[in-house]
Structures are given as C-alpha cells and as structure tokens.
Image (cartoon, rainbow, N blue to C red; front, side, top):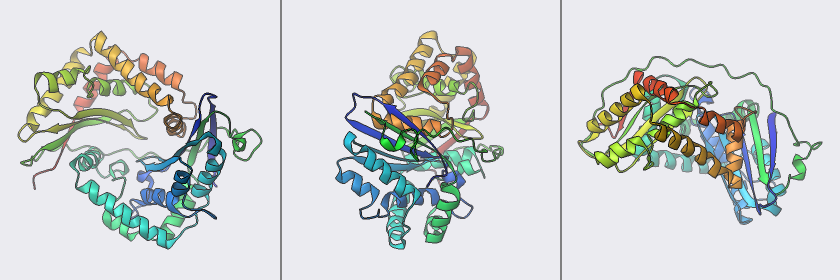
Length: 395
C-alpha cells in the first residue's frame, strides 16, 4: 500500500453523494531519464487494471452510477471518484487496492499505450496544447519542469511492464500522498484505530530542488494562421510567502469581463475573443502566463497590449475597485469548488499533499491580504523575465 499517506474526512450530513480523492506527490517531472511519460501511463493503468473478481476500477465505479477519473500533472497525480453515499466505503477500498496493489498486465499495458499514443497525437494537433508545453519548455529550458507531462512518442513506446512495475514500487508507493473523503459520514475504514484512520501528516524529507537555468527568450516566428500566444514568466515557487500576489495578478489579466485586460484587449482593441490567465506554483519556481488566441497578423499587437498592461500595473498597481474584484474572484473560484463534494475533495487533496496545514480559511486570508503594491511588484517581476511562445510556429 501507499507508504506515506495522510487521511482526512470532511463530514457534511446534507450530502447524498461522496467525493473521494487521492493525491500523490509524484508527477511527470519525477519520471526517470529516458522514461518520460511513465507517470501518465501509470495513471492510465491503475484505473484500467482488473480488480480481484471485478472489472477495472473505472468500469466498476461507473456501473454503480458513479464517476471516476485520474490526472497527471508536473508534480502530482490525482485519483478521484464521486459516488452515491451508500457506495463510499466499497469504492474507497477498491480505489486504495487499485492504486496500492495493482495486478500488472502486459495486455492492459499495450491497450492503454495505444490510448496514450492517441492522446499525444491529438495534443500535437492542437495548438492550444502544444503552446502550453512549448511555453514551459521555453521557461524552464533543460529542466524537469519543462518536460511534457505525457512524455514523447518514442519514450512512451519504449516503456516496458518492468519499467512500470519498478516505477510504481520505487517511486509511486514511496511518495507522500493525501486521501480526502467528503461525505455525509466518516467511512468506517477512516475512523480512528483503523488501518487508514486519522493518519497524521507525513514528515518526509523533500525531494531535492534543482534550480532552473537561465531563460533565453527568442522572437516569435509567426505562421500565416490563427495563433495561440503564451506571454508570461517565472513566478514564486509553491509555498513561498506572498506568492498569492501572482494569483491576483492572473485574475486582473483573466477573461472575466471585469478584468482590466479584458477591457483593453477585447473591449477597446477587439483583438481577442478567447484568452485566459493563470499561475501555478512548483517546487523551484512558479509559472505565470496569459494565453491569447490571435488572428493572423495580430500577434505582435496582442503582445504589445499585454506588455503595456503589465507595465502600467507595475508602475501604478491596480485600482482599489479592480483589486477588490480580483480578490473576490480568486476567493469565489475556490469556494465554489467546496460546494461540490468531489471538487472539495480534489481541492483539499491537491493542497494537502504539498502542505498538510493548508485550509480554505488561511487561503482566503492570504488572498485578502494582497495589496496593490504587492501586485505592482509581481507585475514588475513578470516583465523582468518575460517569455513569449507562439503555436503554430513558422518553420
């Protein structure tokens, strides 16, 4: 089973369904050299391997009327399900069995490898996907944070069953994990005194951080086509004091009709219908970016508008109205998720696998404490290391 798992139960007696989420502190950046894509393939397999006397976890849960899925990121994996309340105990046990004691099967590996290869092909054909991988590669050149989550086609095709089995045993099971159940009751298997019950946060030595090298920005090579433009820079690492200013800055540059960038980019200039902004914190650094869809010949103007908006934000900061709006948007995005048992479980698991002391209340206060001066400093930092990535790109 998982060697270093902390467990959390959130009881809401008004619920009729339950959300279950297991977060594991193992992602694509932790894949061994030459085995890129292993975490992603392992995620597929753990959901697809047959259970003892049953179908795969995914099929079994859906036969119960539930929903289940998994995802792999750069630094974590999530396995989650939403089920009827009466099925909570059974599905929780099956999920832990599926991820902790898999029955490795070569036929399932070949089947899921085909699915993953199709995923990679679909992503390679979609500039919205390729620009995000390319942006991280430009932002973290030669670093694990710049690796594509799904790996490359040659890497995925080279993975053998022994690679998967070794990776599961040596890396996956030994990683820190957090299990969260949001339900109308605490499952019996999580009660104090049971094997999975009330496990405290695990104090593991963190994996060694590897400082990213220097960024070498390059001029975009525009294709004669609609383009996706990613404009951003490194931000503060996960857990760094004061990093919430980058989240607020992302709200100020997001696609909400209340954002200053929306007013300029879409309202005044009519340059973009589709755009968004977000920030992600990783171990060594964060990644802040604005992603904009630009019509043919409009890309340079889009870059100029975003850059000028960052310059204005760095010089003057947001207005009091815009700052309060951004704070409320960041807060509501988090709180809306707590209204769904599945999203609530995902939120808590994702955060507590990194920071066992994380709470919604502490996060709310950190967002509310961000000042206009903090946002101005964040904008200046983004400007100082600005990277622009475009896809499709002229050959």
